[in-house]
Image (cartoon, protein in one colour):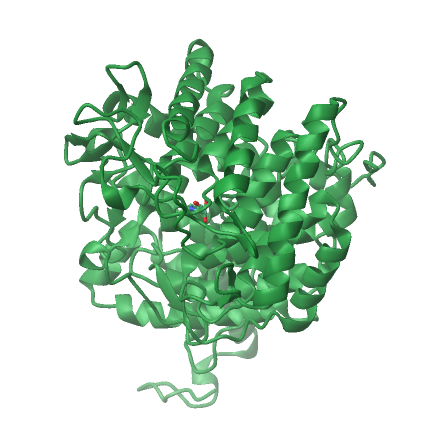
Length: 636
Ligand code: DMJ
């Protein structure tokens, strides 16, 4: 250490005696300790504290609305994960960013104003990469216990008897659905193996541009369906393909939403159902590749991401570079599970931040419009829909609540608040007595309901029981009415399959009046609602309606080499679209199979289905964190 010579003070100890020097040094070190210690008592927002304390010493973001203690117990901190500053960056700056990796709205505005946002994004990206790499490195102890998880389930995942019912007719129907799955799968395997989807007429594979160069969408989407149906030979082929051929090092433009719901969701379910470790490894590896999409000024992710470079951007068709509600709002379930499995809280933090932005912004009439700017955090247009562009955002609110073992009160509040606004502004009754969900364009109603919106019967049904006591029956009735309307959209067509969108104007009810709304692409939403309504009410009509759909699919969509969508549900002269969508395997056939199975096959007491019908387990925090060894492991 170099002391500069002070005027009038000798260089030898600056004129102090040894004992004086000792006392002075003691005083000085006491003062330093006091000052540093005081940082711990400063309010959380004080900048100094942010600089000096890494996330390790501050409160972690909670999972759901569980207590901080729960979250602290559960989550490993970045320090424990070996997170280190990226090379060449100032560690204090990194620490302040690490502490709040999810860019808060206030912080964003502040940073934008000071022109520092871009710098932050670069740093955040480095941190994300650094944290992710460290979190997945082999020297990080893996503390997720599959056995413990299984011990926390209330029922065996496949039920007592694989879900077989005591009713012979229902069992026959179930077998029929299983045969349809095998037929769809066999043809995919024969003609399109490793591609994303089967083209059943031309007998070849389709790759498409939704998955950024990832392949095998139909395989990933089928894993759990094959497994629950007991198609084990087929499941093993699928599993082997994932082990040997699923290459995540692709370099194309992917839809964050589609990769998340199909690939992340599919791999998560496969892991939770089978306990095969490689699924976990793959899904966490994939999750890491999605993180850069969140590096925007608000933390609201953009819709498209290059899985290789991490560059992200908004869909060209989305107004003014906006992000889509149903896309950024349909990540929560999978991302919470990614944190669960990886012990890396970053995934949960990313989706919690989305909520934070949404909670802060003003909502017209309490409604959530479909387009939001990831830069300003403001709505870009006032188009509200429970169908396309909005749909699964609402679904994920109630399912987040259910998946948190009913502890995520924030999600609950947002869901019932949104539902109230939807009822007040969108729910309509037709002159013929059909209840439907209209779309809302800045206050003007478009009396159109998309096939996609038909999932809402099931959604309102599963949320009915947790509403205000006086509203529970009302919600169940509303769910039944909407499911009835969607069934009507099927029965009013020649093929008994429903159109892409149906209207309630120009004298028509529940029918498509426009030529380009007449197609059916093997979508699941109507059958999904039958399945939930069956489980909730056990009204046999839902199984009958499901059987009508099976017959219609067999008659109009089954072709020589698979299943195909059709161009017009109102004509019996078939015009096939030559596409066997992967969601037909993951959703449509799975929901049909569950409809004809006992309730204990993937019991709703233990599982929620993501929007691609991949089952994810309810997180029973207190059970999972109980240090006592599990003695109640369920057997199959
Ligand atoms: C599926 O990929 C998902 O259900 C998504 O949420 C909406 N659309 C398709 C099926 O129609």
